[in-house]
Length: 466
Image (cartoon, rainbow, N blue to C red; front, top):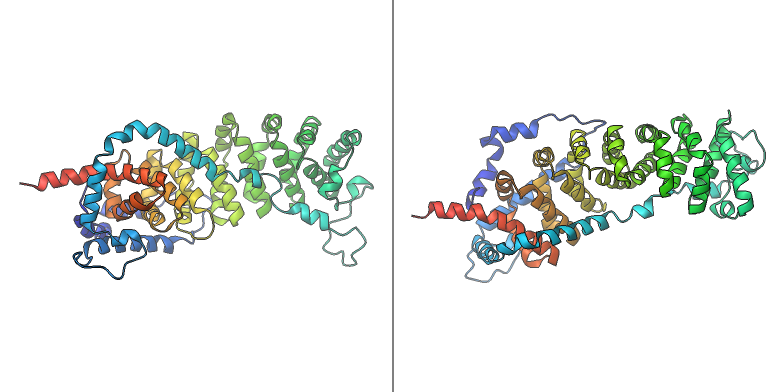
């Protein structure tokens, strides 16, 4: 461990003086479905920002007079003496950290749960496809029919694709069972158009009502929907995967879906489907992963690499679904290892420093989960995670700062080496600033982390004194 003064020279020459660290950063890792992320420039910027923080600490003007121009970043206005004074004040609090750790950890889990609380808002028919279905013109009303789906060769209920949710839900209880049976029979038709329409109707029927989901689940629809996940017609595949997603929201249907062999088929959609189909497949896997015993099965079937691919290449909505599903799956240690091996850390670090997407906080929560295992910590360090987290503490939202310092705590709790790297990255000034001006939870976490960073500083001071 080094002091702040020493950290300036160490961090400037880190890649030159320590070939082992350079080798780790240049090491090729097995990234499945991987394309280069757009965030490397932002990671470089965060490293420069951290170095700027260190320089401002070392070369700040004489503090005897007033400072008329201050950086808006609190940590850049802290001198080494102010930092040492604050660390000294925190020394008296260090004995209370172990006693309050369990309650603090419980609060952290609640915060993490809230960070992913929008699952219910995105778990059922998130694609807007229902609005598209409701607005489709009646067959024959549009003269330009070249782009229209092929006409369904049957008449009546399955012939129309323009049913709205309101029409579907207005079906009387006595007509519901024969309607569901008609749809289930349609799923096994030789016509792709009939299959597509039947899957679309089941999707709508299962959207909002739990009693409909129960009836459809008991009717044999699930085994009939699963083969459509491999259909070459994109809309048929999309309707089928979304119908299964909606059905999975009923607890009793989760086991039916899983035992029918849907997991591998959902993963196939996650790899090959349209953007909307991939999003809904990820949400369906997330819904199944709410049952602890299915998490390992989902990971073992190969869900994590395509989730990482969605995290890299998906839309904002797709990335959010991938993050939420990865978070739930990675509560199992073996899935943490799978996520690291699949290259999840690099895009997660990239998302931490992206502004305006609303994904930084969720990315930090997943990083915190991966930091619970050694290979996760090593990957986070290799991919520039310390720099990104330090920048999040300096520039992130209040909640983002809380998650950033929580992740740094995970990384530094039992690793003296990581504490040294954090000091060299310029982490102490923003942590001191956070301990003074952050939220109550952020202050507590920052003080706790500074307590760990202070120990080697104290030892270094003692060993240098006569």
